[in-house]
Image (cartoon, rainbow over all chains, first blue to last red):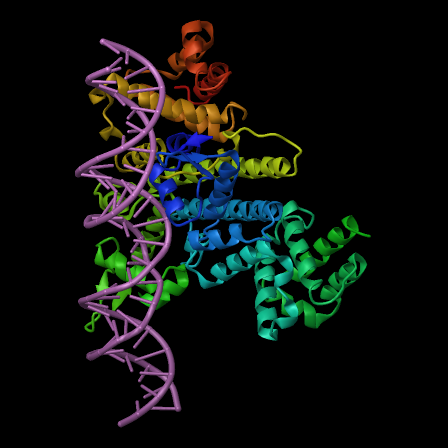
Length: 244
Length: 244
DNA sequence: ATAAGCTATCACGTAACGTGAGAGTCAATA
DNA sequence: TATTGACTCTCACGTTACGTGATAGCTTAT
């Protein structure tokens, strides 16, 4: 039961922003006084928190509105998703720290740096690739099953696997049983299960295949040298931990 | 020697954005062809990288322009500063992961959460406090000495110490000799040295005073319980490592 | 020389607010 | 009870950092 300024002080966002969110129907306070003062309930605050989470992830307000007002919006799933994205972001930050470190060395003349290296780790929301990845996440939060893979064409599938592989390629110097690697491998597992049915054992076997069959290896290692081997390990670990 | 699209592909930012940066004089390519095609040199790219760093930190383009075109802009100092901010940001991200974790627990009904806790870790650029902190950083990158403390009124000083103390309060569960803590303590040391002259030994003694003299302790612990004790340790460590 | 793919410059559109202006509300105080 | 100060409301226009065509010129490969 808080008035605008109290909410503003509590959360750090401006009064005007709260007005604006009300105006566009993103967050309408559940109660208003006779003098049309906005009164925010605890539920409203939780909603706001949720909104800020999505904003932090780079969603547009329009998209946020769609997602959180969707009837089958699973708050907990969304939060867990969000957690993963945060960890990804942290990884990117670490990458940036590295980039900056390299840049400092470079600026001091201690190192040379390729142009490509100079821009590693930035988060370019306008990058259509990342854009799409995010949209997928958004839909995922609404309904996992809506992403019916049967309706995807082969290019669509290839695209999606590409996204996961690229992510894995970035992590392949971590331990295969690290949290992040396991998390992404989990995505891979779930993705595969929307195509066919894979038991953990089958999933483990598939990983083995990635290194045994050269065609697989070559295909996968395009995304990063040694990725296939890394995936085999990670998939085995994942399967063992999640075996039925 | 790259044309717009090549730069765009390399960096992930749009052609239009490069046009815009040229338009507002933020990044004018050092060369143009007869047909007024923009040609970006390696130096331009480094400039761009620098711009993106500042953007990531939440600076407005106007401010970035001021800072990087300033004659006494120290690129390396700025980079090192940037590194620190990145680490700070990563800490905040960790905090957010915690917040999300707590929220998940809460949503599952396993925990209760205060409203304040729900919003910990967010980065609100519109927050005037953080705003000002960032501006200070910007100026620092340009010229440390411009921040002439002699010209500050007492409230200004209090405000500035408040900023540092708040930062320290957030770090006080880390080890006093951790990188981040030492970095912030270093700020404190430099700040004090713009008021009077403190040898490392004097600095260490001051830290001791913070726990010995209750008036100091009370004052400091307002920013967070146990902060004074933490600062004493951190200041001692800092002094020992930097002794003349 | 012609098409495909860049590039340029207007110029208008958009998202997410900021920033007053003018007026009504509310609680504490004189 | 009147007033003051802090807060609130609703317009409504301003701003930042680009997006999105439209139209036209440039460059290179066939």
